[in-house]
Image 1 (cartoon, rainbow, N blue to C red):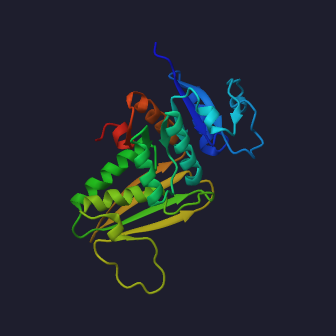
Image 2: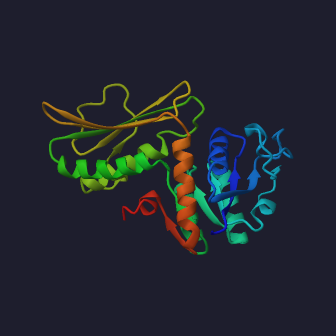
Image 3: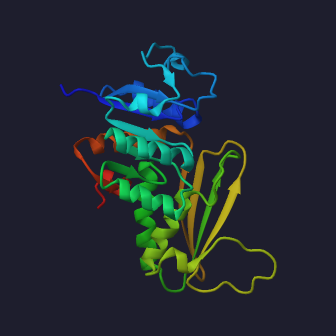
Length: 269
């Protein structure tokens, strides 16, 4: 029997951190190696399995460098500023990384790409298997309906989400843009207010909603004359993202370097 993959969880006391811990504990192919959170977190020093009624033998730490010693892969769903520090730590420790954080700048994305020349990285705005499939469907639908149909991306998340549109919405927009033979930069419309005039053909609009505890809803609308096609994904639990991220961690086992996304993980490429 192969040895379990040694996983470090960043932001382990947050909502996604809890989902990741629960899924790691339930998977015999994975072993919790480290659990990291901010130094100011009151749970620092406590056992990472305490919330789940078990002794994991891993203390929650504020030191990423210590947590990465002997680890195989880091799974990160935090904030861009923290993720970039963790990326540098992974490069230094030669540890693979799964990045589910969103809201990166173009410069930060370029640095992730550069770092993937030294370590292997799965970087995706949404780790859900269903969303990965949806991305493929959106590209195909946009290609077929490229003429005479208007494309809108609608998303809703919980009140605590800090970036908008969501990384997933942007990825769906990129897929739609690719389907109509454009780049998203040249056709995206992110806001409408006042007298905007008629909708410009070939653009892709975005609508963002925030409220309550919505885990993540995404719909791509392709509206034509007399009909519209709606492709929708609704997440009711963060476990779907955690399971996808851990599937990505397993995918990286035999990858020394390279930048991958969930399309690679699921064999769509």
